[in-house]
Each structure stands twice: as structure tokens, then as C-alpha cells.
Image 1 (cartoon, one colour):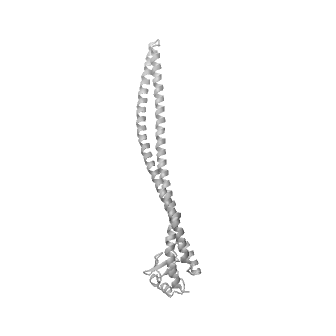
Image 2 (cartoon, rainbow, N blue to C red):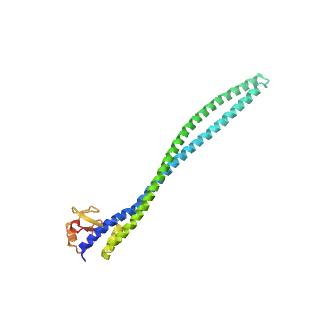
Image 3 (cartoon, one colour):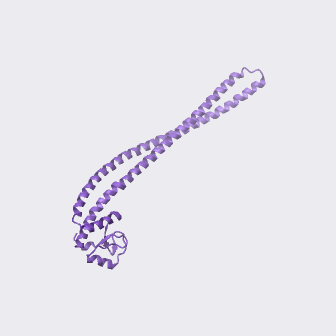
Length: 241
């Protein structure tokens, strides 16, 4: 077996597999992560809108309660004023006047609370409007980018099938035992089974490679592996590529 020729075939195969691995990673990892991020962004924006709407609703209910209290006080003062002219003693008359003054003070306080509630509602409505606009913007972004990612996934799937066919054409010429070793490393080492020697270091893990190991590579009578990352080592300049 000519190991130099087999290494040259593996280098060509690695180039194809790198492209294939990157496409598969994009389909299986990158695109799903991007979709998840978009969903999270949409969820946060929807939650902010919901919180703003709930706050507005709470303020509106509180305002309604204050208005009911105000109406009750106004009814009470109207009743008290009607009763005022039916009283027979000065003591009862003075007590009713005192009651009316107390009710007037309560009404004044209620009116202030209603006005403050209105101000709070106006501010809360502005927050709802802003949150709604922001949500619509995020929702549109979500729709647009999901569409782009789905189209990208379709294109990549088509490319992957094409690359697999091309890969099959390359692998048929590689020694089966060497191919088996290569593919095991490919799966274990993140899609990179080969590494060139560069300035005395492994091109994958960048660890120093001893001179005797480099000499073993140059003999080309067996596959030589990096002691650190266990990838198949080769010297690019020695191969006819």
C-alpha cells in the first residue's frame, strides 16, 4: 500500500468532509440556535406587552373603584344636605353640618385620587403603545428571519445531498481500512480527522510534534497520529495535491 497516495486521497476527502460537516452543523445546530434566539426575543417582547397591558388594566380598575367611592360620597353628601332641613334641634343640625364638611373633604381627596389615577393611566397607555409597537417590530423580524432560515435550511439540505454524492466518489478510491480509521476520527474529532504539520506543530491542536514523529511521517509506511489530539498527521509539501 502506498501510504503517501492514501494520505493525499484523505486530504482531498477531508476538504469535502469539512464543507459537509459545516453544512450539517449549520442545519443541526446553528439554525436551530438562531431560531431559538428569535423565539426567546419574541417571548420577551410579548411578555413586556402583556405586563404593560396588565398594569394598565390594574390602574383602570383602581380608577373605577375610586370613582365608585367618589360617587358614594357625593350621594352621601346629597342625602345629608336633604336631611339637614328636616332636623329639629340645633345640636342635630350642627352634627349634620360637621358630617357634610367631612364628606366634602373626602370628596376632595377622592377627586385628587381620581386625577392621579387618570395621569397614571395615561402614562401606562403610552407604555402599552410603545410595547405594542416594539412587539409588532419583533414579530415582523421573527417572521422575516424565520422565513430566511427555513429557505437557507432547504438550500443546505440540497447542498448536503450533493456533497454526499461527491464524497462517495472520493471514498471509493480510498483503502477501506484507512477509510474506517479516518471516519472514526472524523466523528470523534468534530469533523477534522487530518492535521498538517506546520512549523513543527499539529495544525489542529497546535501542540509541538517531536522530530522523530515527523520522521515517521516522512517514511510513509504507516499512518502517524498526533500524540495530543490523535488526528492523522501529514506533511502537505510531500503530497502531490
